[in-house]
Length: 258
Ligand code: ADP
Image (cartoon, rainbow, N blue to C red; front, side, top):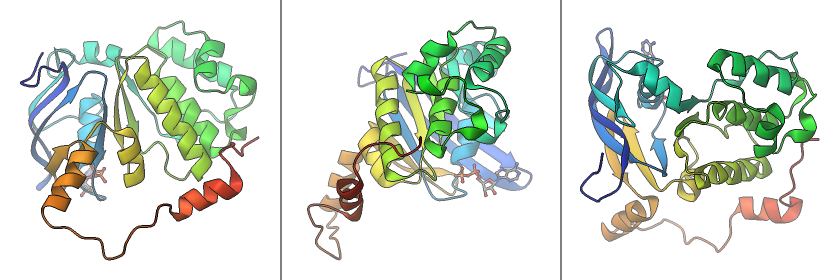
């Protein structure tokens, strides 16, 4: 599938609606995701991000609309979609007492794959934790491990739902690098986040959702330029650095989790 800009479309969502009883959580959204991009779904709590994400992940039933992923129809070919996507489970979904290698073998069994546990752990920089129990990992390590599990079936697309929530600045930046690395290998990444610095750093394009609708969709840079063009002015002049820059300058980029 090619769109007007000549870019390869890997996800196409048209008029997607999700109704929970009388409440319409997603009100007919349409958008495309291009192959190889990092695409962000942003919006306040309750905007409909998780619902939309879970529908694309084949985990939730839509009310109406069409979704095509890598050319496959969500309605008639969900099994084919499942084979080419990687879904990040909530970290609470892992058996806490199992070693990381054991958990990967468990996932291998579930996906009918034969990923090399050590190679997979190497991609997320957790090789030295191979024999550690999941519960002994730091927050950042748990997130890196959960991202590793999305890669087991060598997916074309991975979905990450708030992957850096609750992490310290070092661990967040480390995860950003990991997500960029994964994209560099050619994987398309769909991510939700509440951190606008994260979206600005990572995402090629973002869709901003509010109350079940997409209210803006573009690259972060273009959105900022458009806002300025509309006459937006900050209340306060920005300095050349912020408090997070101070924090990183004082405490370094090194991870603190061992
Ligand atoms: P977000 O991820 O943007 O915070 P959600 O997709 O989780 O938004 O939720 C969108 C809206 O749908 C919210 O008002 C939420 O309360 C409602 N909602 C989500 N899941 C259900 C459900 N299973 N049953 C009823 N309402 C739901």
